[in-house]
Length: 452
Image 1 (cartoon, rainbow, N blue to C red):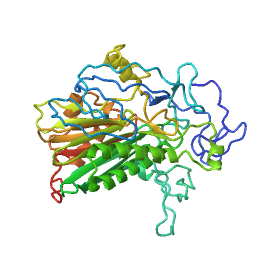
Image 2: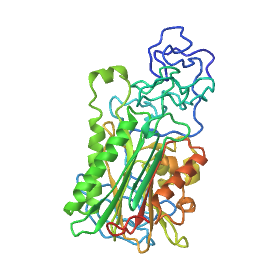
Image 3: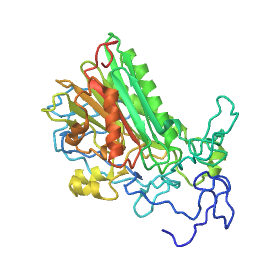
């Protein structure tokens, strides 16, 4: 805690311009002497540079090879019991094969990184919490409110302006993205702001389509905005929509699902990159912030195939219907911790206990050094579900066995309920981050069969 009131040019709550000596914001009444408390968790940090994806984690015995530019050659598929994935380059690598050494490139020009470490810490400038005060029972609703006028959920008296703030007490109102749920038949997803963040920077997209021969295909895309970047919520939303639209267009045309997933990640990257082309007025308001950025993980399920694609540290897990058979993690993080484990410098427990554990070495954004989509193809020999999620969930169920324990036994039949249970598990654990999860049953049921 600072010993004196910080000198602020704008209110950290509503961004209203401040004058020297102000103790409270004249617009929303925010107490300027209160310094936001640093969260207990380790927020995501982004490390400029690139390195080979790590290999070899418990529950997953396959390394991932970089994808050649512009291609994702389909290759042979595998049983989940084998847990030998198809690398993005279309070839299979033996377990334990170490990645080739590669020195990290210099940080991109203009990125706000430490010259000594090349690490960009993800510390949002705004407070982590915006608690709404309890309604005052002595204050009645304003009479003669126009029909359709929004009334403040905090004081229940003030009118909400077009910016989402109460004109009476100044409180920001809950956003539509604070909690989102969608049920698309055999696939469902839930996203929640969590208990510590003031907005939800995650996004998802789910959908169903048909392959050229009429067989069904189900997809789920989950994105996590990088909080230290400009407009992380816009980045995750743009990426999830672009990837979903790309898949829904490519799959019916007969594009192999693994190639379609690769192309969808490229489309998502292009959508996030486009957000960096902001108008001059936006750059003037935040001249020192870096480009919008997010991570991405996606899954495509057909009657025979399970395709996974990702960049960053959002994950996908395989949980079989028969819990006597082992679950598995299907992705490898692009993160500092994963690099330390792959290099043999730390064990997994030590690496993820380090404050640098959530430094990401791969993300979507204009300031990313190089885009390397990872894709893998599997052919499960038994029914189960794919859990596609952000670190807001897997922080509370990191190992595949831990994730399987919290996935309901009827997840194949009730994906929406299962997604709700998983989000609840993260909130019960502390909800330190935004939480997003999609539940995709395998095999996908015939078109029109639904999820019941």
